[in-house]
Length: 503
Image (cartoon, rainbow, N blue to C red; front, top):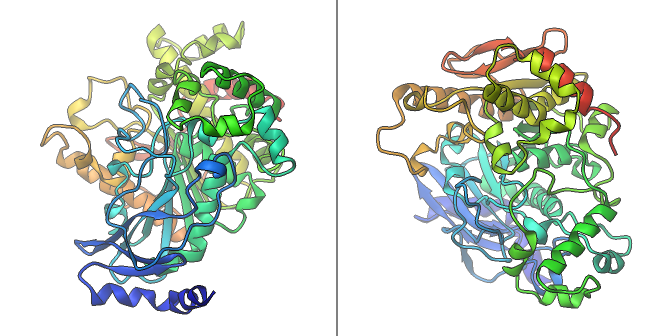
């Protein structure tokens, strides 16, 4: 009790340690942290925001972090959450160090920062792979522009999204199943309590994420429990119209997963928790399909984000949202390239809307439009009646790759925003002056949105708020400009199919 009081008394004054030591030291609610200071940016890595979800805490809501004595070394990343091999090099990198003890976050801030806006990155990876520890998400360049940048881990795979009849019985009326989403909320709550120690303003938080991180951001916007935890949101290739599964459907999937590792469908929670964490990668099965992740558990998640947006229940906050030109790059990888067959007779009409495009180009564009491009425009339109929303379409391909790739693939905007090309396995000199200038411009759009709620792009055009009538978006291209939504007629047809009744 005495230590808790002393921590509270020291909390506000903690940043003074940073100027007194070569390594910056600050105090958070659990104790002192020692970070790294480089080129005017202080960084702190591997900070626990919740207790390790191991043993009896596996498949439970995140518990408060454990206090520590002395000064905790925060100069190295924590482990990535348990995950399978990705096979395609995606998800931001390779998770060499993994552990079930992975609920940590990382912070970058300008030296002596005070009252700066905060940006919180939620990584992608299909809710099955990825980590906030990947160096492509290094926050130094964003922090240098005047924000405090945070990246987080959250439970993924079957340790993050899992239902089973035994678990439902144990949980009774407590939230269950969506542990990855619970972790994201717990991280945002931790940020509210602690970010001032790093010079951040807890009342100026912007959440942003790509792919599964973008989808997670939509689920946060649709969740009343997230009210007050952030004041702006950026959704990069997050979809928005996929139908989440129900608890019974997820329980059935859980039973199948348990049987894949040789346990009975009637296994008890004690038996399930006794299985080594790595074996749940085997239970997950192949990394196929786009439907894994958050589901309607009836407690934490009660409806699809699309329904919350359509009926005006989503959080009314400034929103930036968009997608890339070649989103089909990830859809084909996950085995979803046959999805257009679900349109039945409508596929012939859809094909006609793409005109003279080759069959390959039609499939590429139509898949990307169906899963990402059209849903982003629909979300922007639903949100435009309140706080402003800003729509973008990303087509930029690095100068040395133009003509050798069919477009801007899924996730290829990320190194431009983080200005982290040096963290990728590419030849020296691959990135040209034009690429670097483009990245600086695009990154400034993201930072200014976090700072003001309006994306002002340095050396770029003025980005208008989206309205259905004007239908204008920012087209990120070698000649970035304001433009109309691409393939609008095809997108409208797809939306007429996709926006049927939702849970």
